Length: 329
Image 1 (spheres, rainbow, N blue to C red):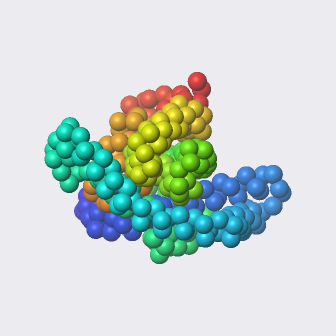
Image 2: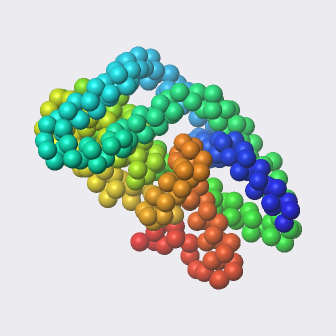
């Protein structure tokens, strides 16, 4: 018990390090599975496949930086400059009505909170280069040779429980892989559709707003709201009609994502109840800040798999896991 208490205290004290380590695990799972897929299609050793995957991703990132990097950076700079003016313009418009003045007086400093949260989150994602480099470097080591870490975890268990521990680790690996690949594809789709839709509406900074929507979609449920706020405000600086059209576009896109993309992409992952997901995001965000928000959903996924396998199955004799039930439908 003393050992467990010490470990919990260290994890709490070093929460940022623990969360970044978990981020490294997520990236390592992605790289390792992509390498396995490549190794399956091309008869190559897993190490060679991993090298090709890393080089391929680096090449794609370099091509994007060369072709659109300067334009994206310029649009993000303009976005941060334009948002305060857009907020002021919206407040002036609302204050021109009596109900609007009452609303502003009642809401007080809470007006613009979503915008500040969205821009703060995006700014953290863009500027936390040191943490990102550390996560990627550690992920490369984990993906290149995960066996020592896996064996180390299993050696912490009694010999009789190591076989079950290996099954749990395999289930966690598969669950995180299905969640990561589904979430990555959804983020790419949301970014593309949002940017294209905003361009069709004639909204400025459509590319930056589309990328912001894709990045924030990593946070289920709350991310779409945070990404819609700056886009609607920028549109409002043109006219209320533009703002309404932009809001309808985001509602339409999120309905596509919620009822089509996510069920299709995550059908083999553990189904996360929306209310539980929102509580996890808000709770971990309050406890651990931005990294708690970013990793709340995959952490909740890990907890759900552990509870199901170690408690429901092992203690209560439960049947199939939720992921199996979803896949069978």
